[in-house]
Structures are given as C-alpha cells and as structure tokens.
Image (tube, rainbow, N blue to C red; front, side, top):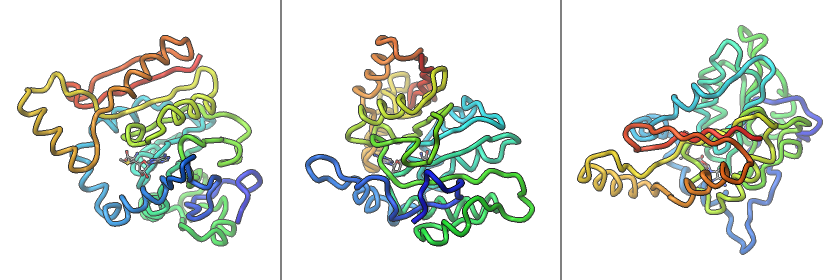
Length: 265
Ligand SMILES: C[S@@+](CC[C@H](N)C(=O)[O-])C[C@H]1O[C@@H](n2cnc3c(N)ncnc32)[C@H](O)[C@@H]1O
C-alpha cells in the first residue's frame, strides 16, 4: 500500500485501501451500502443521470482553477465532473473522494479512457508503480487523485497527503444522500483555506414548477432514492448566519435544484 502522505499523486482509485474503516458509531458500513447501490448502475450511470442531475455543469463553471489550485470533489462517483475540469487548459490539481469502491473503479476506467491518463483501480501495487505518471501525448497533465473514504472523515493530509487545505471543495448530488451530512459539511469547511469555496448542487423544493409536474417528478426521483432534504438547505443558510462563510444560493430549472456557494471566512 502506498502512503498518500509520502507518494506523489497517483491517477488511481485505491480500492480497498481506505483511510477509515467506513463504519459509523453503531456499526453501519456506509461504503458497503454505496457499493451495493452502485454495483450495477455505475455502468449506465453517466448516460442515465444526465437527464436529472441538472446544474452540474453550472456548478463546474463556478469552480475557479489555475495552475496552482487544488480542487476536491466529495462523492465524485464516476469522475464525470473531475474529467470535465481536467479538460480545461489549467485545471490545477484535482482530487476525488468517494465512499464506493465500485464507483471509483468506474472513475479510474473513465479517466483512463477519456483523458488518456493511465489508471487502475483497486490494485495498490499498481498504484505505487504508476504513481505520478502520465500517458504519452499528455505530458504535463496533472493526474487526478482518487481516494476511497467517507466525506465526514475527510482529512486532506491523511487521505491525500496534502499539507495545504483545498481551494475549492464541491458536492454534486451527494450531500443529501449522506446520513451524517452535518459532519460532511464540517469536514469540508475544516479542509478549505480561508477565502476558499465550498460549492454544493443538490435537489431543491421544486416550488417554481407546476404542481402536478412537481408531484410526478418527486415520485419519479423517489424511485432512485433521491429527494430534497430541507434540513440540509437550512443548515447551509445557518452556516452563513453563523459567520463561518458568505453564502449564496441560485436556482436551477425553477428550483428543481440549488447551487450553494459558500466562501469561507
Ligand atoms: C448521486 S452520486 C453523484 C456522483 C457525482 N458527484 C456526480 O455528480 O455525478 C453520489 C456519490 O456520492 C457517494 N457517497 C455517498 N455517501 C458518501 C460519503 N459518506 N462519503 C463519500 N462519498 C459518498 C456515492 O458513493 C456516489 O458515488
């Protein structure tokens, strides 16, 4: 197993290598639950989700990158968003964290296919040998660093070997599905530099959509175990009131979803 604190960034998902035991007090293994949820659907995830995970590209437009920035997606799934960022002229350093080994395996394959960066998943020996390499023709491209772990246990140093906090951390349709989401928000804020941005896109209350349409939509989304969680939205509002950050909300598709932008004080 490579030690993230000493190894250079590697473009791989370190499958079973976890910086946590993925268990919460009470013994619930959330990572195993996510693996069960995505074991089959990860293969069609990007094709099917494009129609209802609205606002992801608009969130990406809010992510400021440059040669020197460090950006983390928590709950990166198939790496769809990280790959889009990586295609910028100056993406900076990109990191992905996810609870699901299965999703990270798909992410690593997708990164390799799309960006031409050699990648592997789950094999920590391969991870070590390929650390820091980029494929021919992609000289200079920073690898995307993927790690398995829980959002609420995020630790830039322990998980990613970073001595500095991140410039931007974002959650794309992830926060509302984390049972211990307050811990995930706190961990993200703790691993962000002052002035850095926490960005969140997630389902909203659909108040500006016609009633019948909104009701049908809610039922349809429930089939995928996703829904609006007002308490998450309220906690973000409270974060602004507490003085920890400057909070702004914008609506996506008539309050189908919101994008929250929190600049850390
Ligand atoms: C709905 S998918 C969204 C994937 C991606 N962000 C996107 O926009 O396509 C949610 C992802 O969050 C991950 N996830 C859920 N709970 C998590 C947790 N506690 N810590 C880290 N990742 C988590 C899941 O494994 C899954 O890959």
